[in-house]
Length: 121
Image 1 (cartoon, rainbow, N blue to C red):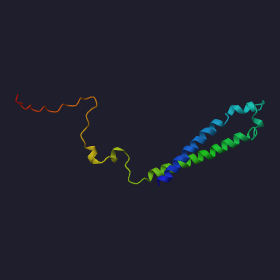
Image 2 (image 1 turned 30 degrees about the vertical axis):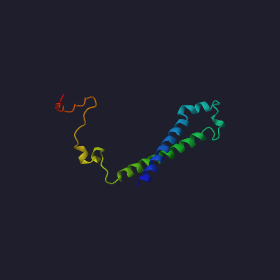
Image 3 (image 1 turned 180 degrees about the vertical axis):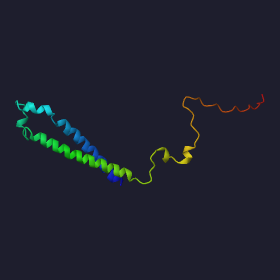
Image 4 (image 1 turned 60 degrees about the vertical axis):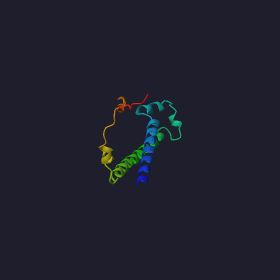
């Protein structure tokens, strides 16, 4: 199960990066007016509107894949058996009842003084 979860996460991240790249490559609505006055886009590989259609269709396909991987990740996360919702719930009871540690700034208490033995002189 964790293999499929890892595959879904990697695919999800790659699709998200591809969507970001494709959206940045696309022209805005007002950019089409410039191509009519010799903007140079009409001589491209896809033509004046061909690149926009190709990029927008590819973006739509990737958005659909992103949506499906989001649903798959939610489904796989819901299937994890026996895991608690909180990290605190995972700590064994013996560790939760341990006495609190001393603060770092508090000096250590000296050991009780041993009574001095009389030394003959």
